[in-house]
Image (cartoon, rainbow, N blue to C red; front, top):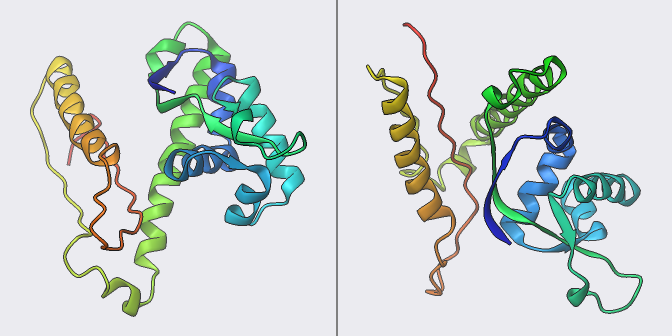
Length: 189
């Protein structure tokens, strides 16, 4: 598995932007290789539907089969081909269809990110009390150039990658999954 992949093909971006496919990519990143049956149980989707989406992700080169994990010829395991995926709308500026796909993918991505935060806010108080110190929200207004914003983004990504890719300590403590995201866009208060 390579470390990252910059998506510059609008067909690949369209394939990964689908909400079910994005969730499958997230599960394969978080939990590692899996079968369609395992992913269907995790998502509540039908196995046939999951298989369809896995084939679309494979056709786009975002996942691949992991035949060494299969116990027999019928069992098919899948894994991501890269740890991280990124894209820039600027890469699609010369193609009207590609630009529309990039805009839609960004909008779907924002909805996905906000959805994770909304689901946390809707959790019962008893669940939220299990996390008395960790969940946070932060924001800031910056005065920067485009190059400085790119530098800021690199620093934020490095911190997030360090935590996301770290070796989880084997200290007997239970660790739950946590969704973290950051965005920075030009704007005015």
